[in-house]
Length: 93
Image (cartoon, rainbow, N blue to C red):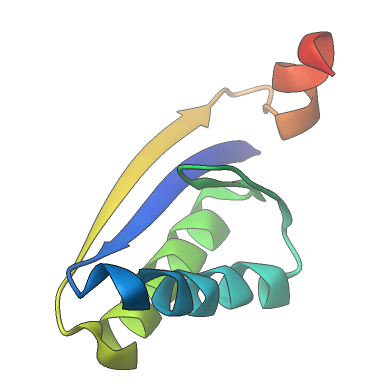
């Protein structure tokens, strides 16, 4: 089990950014993975291969949905014993 935080950054007119980011978030919602949307990125939880597949799909959707060019920033946290979103943030909730 791992978690990944990622941000899809479409290089388009600012007024269009939210529409493209929402399409990327829809990919996460449909994935069935545990997730949390934050102000500057989305955190997802699951098997590393699943995480990378979802991030790739979100990146491609953003690229193909009117952006043409997208930067995606990824941070991954994984331990042999596993790691979850809730265990990392429970102290702060």
